[in-house]
Image (cartoon, rainbow, N blue to C red; front, top):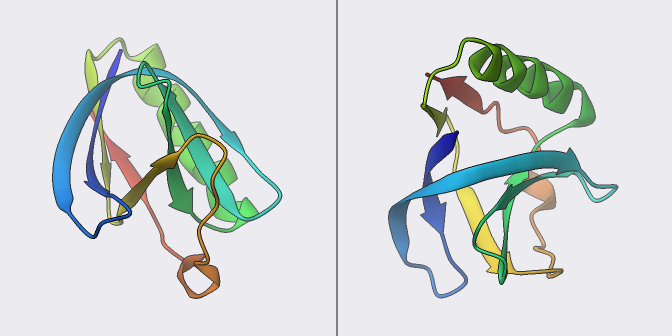
Length: 100
């Protein structure tokens, strides 16, 4: 399964990425963290815990429908070095979506 997203890195550059989707988790700082084959980076999506539950359900539906690619929409994905955090308290209300 692949995942496509628009990515913002720490230098301010914005670009599209397509990566192998390994999984997703939610951390206590208010970010969903995408796991991909890019082992040196984390991909952060700031959102509330309630929105994460909805987002996770959508990802599960796409995986179960056996589409080869899913796209993250309605928000920016932030690429950081693995383990780094972002000061994005004002952006935690992003309502990301998943499309197949």
